[in-house]
Length: 253
Image (cartoon, rainbow, N blue to C red; front, side):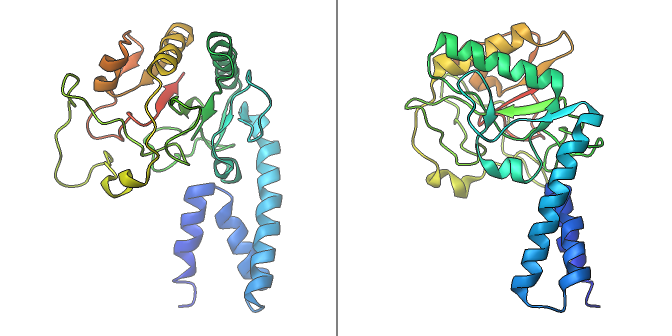
């Protein structure tokens, strides 16, 4: 019976970080009868070791990690180090090169601009990156919007939605029942009040649409695409049953 409460923790850590569940299991096996401090130390050591193994193994799956440290304006990096710690910033080498090329372009057009990324994928295997419906093979990546003042509205990049304007109405009505289209209403007052930098965000969308492979596509809410005046076959609407895309840009090859 003692395992009943441990299994959900192992499952949750595996879903969120890939390696966390195994690290927790190692801590249970080697330190469950010791102090909480010892247990957490064993977990941290196991997690760090597995994190390093996953980083090394990613190359076998043609994946690389978007870095967490700032390597200059021509390199993309994760917005929050938590994404790196949780093994969620891995993308294919082709997508990593595309993202760095975007960073170079944005710096050329708007000196000092930075490209910040959110969820990519896990380092190995084709495992879904929940709560996303995709992000399972290294060919998908979420990018932040650009805001005036050089900062970001949300500390994790997600859920700071750009609400539709009267002249750019939302296509999706409020739905009943289960849906992944979360409005996160309770979180909105906690988001920074920063205006969207429409010029930089629109430039990034246009550049990506022009430079992605023919099979590539980009998700953004239609009301925001209208507001930014961006169009093209690769610029798509993800539908009303998937997560909103007026808080970030989703690109995939």
